Length: 355
Image 1 (cartoon, rainbow, N blue to C red):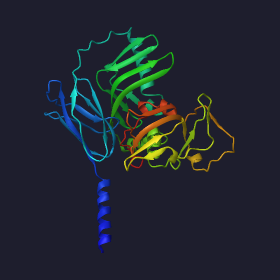
Image 2 (cartoon, helix red, strand yellow):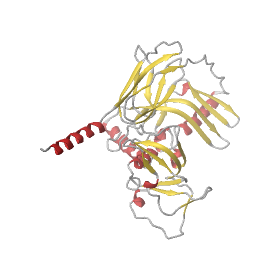
Image 3 (cartoon, rainbow, N blue to C red):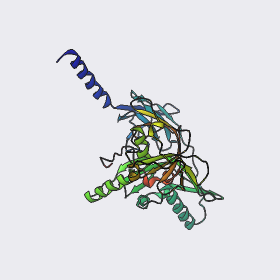
Image 4 (cartoon, helix red, strand yellow):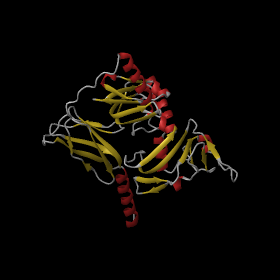
């Protein structure tokens, strides 16, 4: 073996090791008095990754690939803490000071029990969703929810994790709810929080069903689309993306699909930036995407946002798992915007592995 070949072999071997390298987020938790906080739950938002701080307030989460992570800390008597952490080429240290909660008075009960049942029904509809997956979800601890109203606005808060069992996808979801609002006047829902996923135990038949349902849920999802953008394979994976040319509905789009190369700029081997000056209309249709689509000159696509179509405005840095910073802009209308907790998958999900 000559020296050149030996050097090349060495470089390739080191590149392979580098590609497989994993990183750690670690740190210490304390309060305003400097006291170390033990037994705090520390988890990565929308994942299956969690740990607990030790007697010295130290936590450690290992085995992480480069990407953007939402680090969440929850401990009884303290306000939840959240820190965005971006891993690029090295592990990260995060030391957090938790704020003590004030003594919260329980809200005054609104009306009778029948009203609370109606509030729960509304909450389940707009928090869990209305899809087939959502129909398989059960909120196990509704008693942690407090409701309040102001004219057409209904608000919900929770003083502990919401526990949701998704019997369609095979996950127990612990959701740390920050706020939930539903405005019946405009039929507008907003909510904010972080989820932690635990696989449910089941029979072999159930596991097989969950694998099928997870795959079906993933295909055509925003997670799927962002990952396809990262690999520059949106068309191959069944997505068609069009530039929207007007501001009102019905929506008018350029007849020919936008090439993914127009949307992405590669930052490095771990991140891409996705941005486009116009709104995008995206449809998941593998059959059409596999065809060479060309319309006659002057012909327009006019859509009324069908069941699988989504309008997207995007300017964000994205990693291989489809994660992005919360400070960046991804605005949605249509199919993706209607999906709720019942259709959510953890970022660890990989179609080939079934979750």
